[in-house]
Image (cartoon, rainbow, N blue to C red; front, side, top):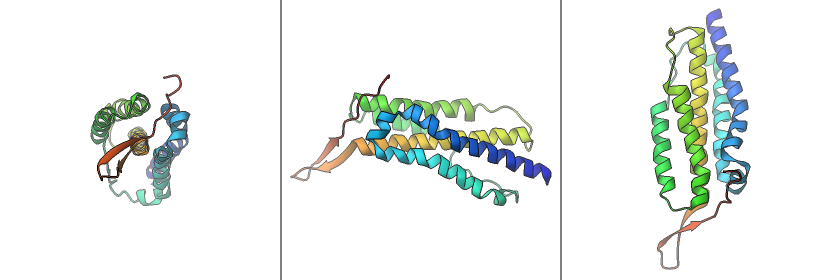
Amino acid sequence: MEETSLRLANNCTVWAAGAILWPLLWINVVGIDVAAHTPMAMLGLAWPPCMLFLDLLFVPHQASGQKEITSYDANVLTSLAFAMGGLLVTSGLGKNFVRAASPILSSCVFLVIAFCICTPSMKEGTQARGVVKAIQKVCLSWCVGLLLTAVGINLQVGVQHKDAQGREILKVNPLPAPKGK
């Protein structure tokens, strides 16, 4: 019983730290200028802390030893980042948009490669293995937040409209040039 309590305490500590550190990472990757011009990107800022705090809320249910349901994994997130990168870069929304989206998607791929694909060989059920899994869960949550940010920017910047004849046209809301990039 004490082993389970210690494992859950370790998980809670990692998840809480991940939720607290996320806004710092997000603002450094996305940038204040882009965030100020695309309010829909804020969904990506809010998502990881909400999901991690929900996990903290349901910690008592995890003590029962039920198998965790993983709704996404590293391969899916990497594939999504590459697919979105291809779509966003070829969408014709402008050089500033590509400059804003590239670091977001690159950060997502980096997090997955660095922290989720490369896993140390540890005995299953140990405290160290539990901490590694909790860190991986935080990194995957951060990747989902980055992907949601990129989608929010895409939806905010490039919006489909119809002209007077009913033809689809692309309205581009220009992003400012990112500072220092």
